[in-house]
Amino acid sequence: MTRAILSDIHGNLEALRAVLDDIDRRGITRLHCLGDIIGYGPNPRECLDLVRSFEICLLGNHDQAALFDPEGFSAGAERAAFWTRQQLETQTDPANLERLKFLAELPRTRQDGDFLFVHGSVRAPLNEYVFPEDIYNERKIQKIFAMIPRYCFQGHTHVPGVFTSDCRFLRPADLPAGYRLGSEKLMVNVGSVGQPRDNDPRACYLLLDDERLQYVRVDYPWRTTRDKIRAIADLDDFLGDRLEQGK
Ligand code: ZN
Image (tube, rainbow, N blue to C red):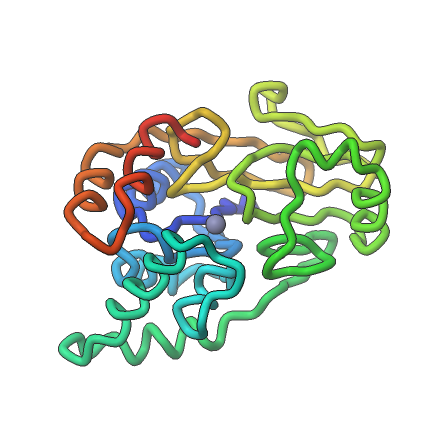
């Protein structure tokens, strides 16, 4: 049965709704989220409520930052993390306790048959970035591949694409007909729903069945999200402005 794999929603409710509508139209009911449900964006509570029913949901570094103090964040990201925490700690919202409990119980990895799911990388599930340019760091890629049982799905960089064990990186544009799973190991970045950074502003997610993966891009009203971010003093305008460019 086909799965829809989402990551890095980052409190962007407009993007998440557009993606969920697209998934619904396809009749797909197996949903996974690879972390960073919240952080940066203006609707953390609403996004958490939508993701809670997913079959698999992992902890991302920004989800963790809402629970504990952020480490290694830029000043802007740190401010956003503290603002996000405030939204989840307001006692006037009785559902917040359940939301915090949900976050606190999220796992860092999930393995389901040949499929391994993480936020960052198999080596450091919460925090390690594997960027497209890392294909020139053969040592890094090979070390990570050595830890992958078969297929590893991840997010964190917000840059979608398929890494092969012979150090190639295939962007979604290189794979218009999707990618057929074979006997080779793969590391697959599913991209970002709420803050894409591959110069395509459309929300990104991945469809996966036992034989094939396919990237999907979905238009959403990013101006609405941008304007919400601009209206919140603790969220840098840049966090809204970058949605227009997808970077
Ligand atoms: Zn992220």
